[in-house]
Image 1 (cartoon, rainbow, N blue to C red):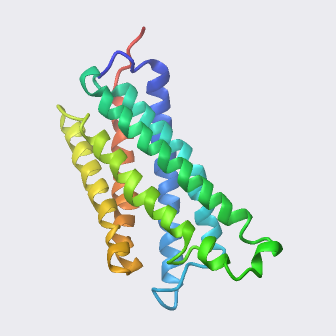
Image 2 (image 1 turned 90 degrees about the horizontal axis):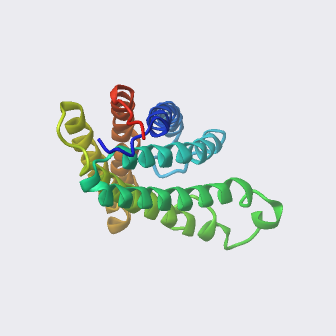
Length: 219
C-alpha cells in the first residue's frame, strides 16, 4: 500500500466501490429485463428500459472513475505508473460513454432530428452507427485497457490476488467483445458485457472489502 493512501483516499475508495456495486447491480437487472422483453435478439432494447440504462451508465461513470483513482492512491509506489495509466483509460471511457449516451438521451429524440434520413447512421443505438462504434471503443477498448493495467498493481494477499485475476478476466472478456465488430455480429458483444457488467461487479465488491479493511496512512 502506498503512503498516498490517505484517509480521504480510503473513504473515497470504499464509497466509490459501494456506489459502483449498487449501480452496476441495478444496470444488470435492468439490462436482463430489457433483453428478456425482446421478440428477436437482433432488436434494440426499447423504452422505458433503454432510457433507464442510459441514465444508469451516466451516473455510474463518476463512481467508476473515483474507484480507479482510489486504486491509484492505494497502489505501491513501484507500480504507480501503471495505475496512472489505468486512471487515464478509465477517464477516456467515462468521457466518451457519458458524452454519447447524454447525446442519445437528449438530442436524438428532438423533433428537429426525428425526421432526418441520416439519424439512424449517427444517433441510433443500432449497428452500424457512429454512436454504437464509439460505445464499442469505450467499453471494448478503453475499459479493458484500464482493467489490465490496474490488475498489475494487485499482489500479495489472497484478496489482492482475487482482484487481480478478476480484473484480468473482466478486461479479456471486454476485449473479446470486439469480435462482434470483426464478425459483424453484435450478439458477440454479449461476451464483453459479461466482462464489464458481471465480472466487474465482482471486482467492485472485492475492492469495497479491500478498502474497508485497509488502514489509511496519515501524512
